[in-house]
Length: 500
Ligand code: ADP
Ligand code: MG
Picture 1: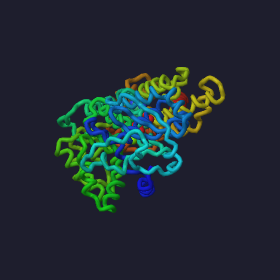
Picture 2: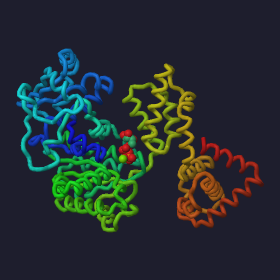
Picture 3: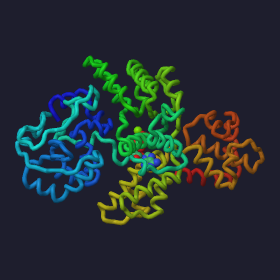
Picture 4: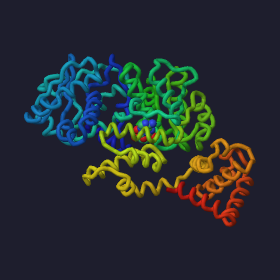
């Protein structure tokens, strides 16, 4: 990374080039070999793991790309031999996925670059002693073409600026709660034009349910299948940083152009701009400009457009014009599916009962679920024991406790209906026969006791009952527990079940 870029990083935590790396270049106008190298390096890191990457691949410096041959510099002869024997094929393959015109990879020794430029590698064209000169077509001012930007630094981590290679459609497990979101994301990724009624696509839902995963998947799918489409993915926070910087540097025109020249703009976590008026304003204009030009826009948020507080009414309503899709909380089946797919990828051997236990107990979000599985697998590797229920419970005791506090009304309704052998629908129905009314009261009682919801909120979850109905139910069950040991046993048992 050069000094200028380094200074930029200090100012805002992340450099422009990092945002740009999410811009997928067209093959007719490759943004530069350097930025391709960043992508290739990201792939190799994912493929070989951090340790190998650090030892052998990170020290490689991109030197040039000409006539289908990529030149890479390494600091020593030993490294050249090692890289050639172990990684040459992988390098070529990874490069070809970025740029199909690449035919060969040439590794040469270039000690000087590493002697003087270990910390700060100036972003100058390779010296004449280097066999090739980088071949960058001149383009109008767009993110993709600012020459000072594309730096490769031996001491930097190129993959920190990558789209997460794990976040692909293939790795996304589809179930009832996310099937619509998945289908909508696929449609954006697969169609070359904007789908009518689908612009913008607004994905919303709680933390860790796969919104970012789907957005990265769209970008990666387009990169592979239609590299001519320019895709820009960034967080709303990043959008703000870039905007503020453009104000400071007095180049807002450039900022506007950069955003408006893409085919697909994806802005993640839009709730971030709530209350930030000038950023909102700029976002609104960018957004309108793209939609008016019939460019695809994909937005994610933690709630639906109409529920976004601190966002101007006109922006909210505009966000809701296209397709608004809710990514719902996971179900047990989906969690189990995700765990199974993850176990396969890890190549780990985890007993089914442990997976069921995890799917049952870690209900908050997929990120935690994955984290739990990783912890269990890592622990077993460390201590050299197989994985069983007991060790799992032990390793995850803190997580499980945290998840236990989040009993939902839906869980309660399901468990109670199962227990009394009535239909789940009767939890919401208006039927008054004692056969269903009593279990429903038990469920209301437990909802009051085990969740933080108010009486009216609980009433709504039971098919829109009045809060006085809930209050009556709670009182009634309290009384019955005192009078009737059978009911009390039932209630105690259910309560324990819900918390276990
Ligand atoms: P969000 O952006 O909604 O907060 P993320 O997309 O960051 O959530 O997802 C959190 C983690 O869970 C990621 O590692 C992601 O890969 C994983 N994940 C979420 N949903 C799924 C799914 N349906 N299949 C596979 N992995 C998923
Ligand atoms: Mg996210």
